[in-house]
Length: 226
Image 1 (cartoon, rainbow, N blue to C red):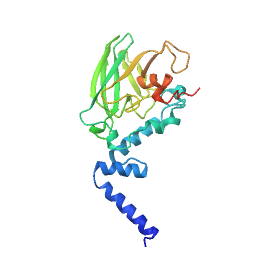
Image 2: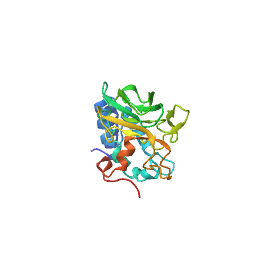
Image 3: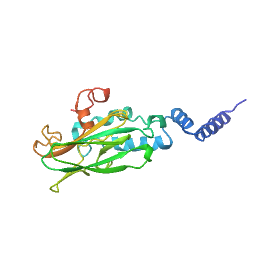
């Protein structure tokens, strides 16, 4: 007769055997135990860390994104390697400089085919123009440091630094897919996104911020608090 201890031992040994059988087994392990493992686990952990920085007075998007975290688990879809960007997959970044001077966008992204570490590039865009960048499809994209709210997102030609507080990072599978375009902007804050009453200050923001400000963001209805 099988004892509870024997059954538990077989389950544990079977689980460890699955881990050693490659990505397919790792995905099954993830589904059995509810948490992604391996590279998918690393990406999912980073995504959750970044998502936890969205909303609130000191978070990405400020109070306009205050209710983002309540639906966070629905955004994090990196549960197995099949949910990650594939080797050779690409996406497009469109950088819109709506200001009167040349500026440099500081792009930061995480593309699993390149490893679990963040990648970065600087792109200079002349005043009043849009620059199109072809880049590896990435699970997470943003401006400035992905985990440092208040980091420099854009450097203006006159030396002014614009921070990334309104540059809500975008996530693959929710804000875009491989082959899609992700937009980033710099210009005057005519819509007063940060709620400080100044519609003339320069601000940088991303497509993800725009999507969440619209009713039906991520197909879940408005997630904005207040």
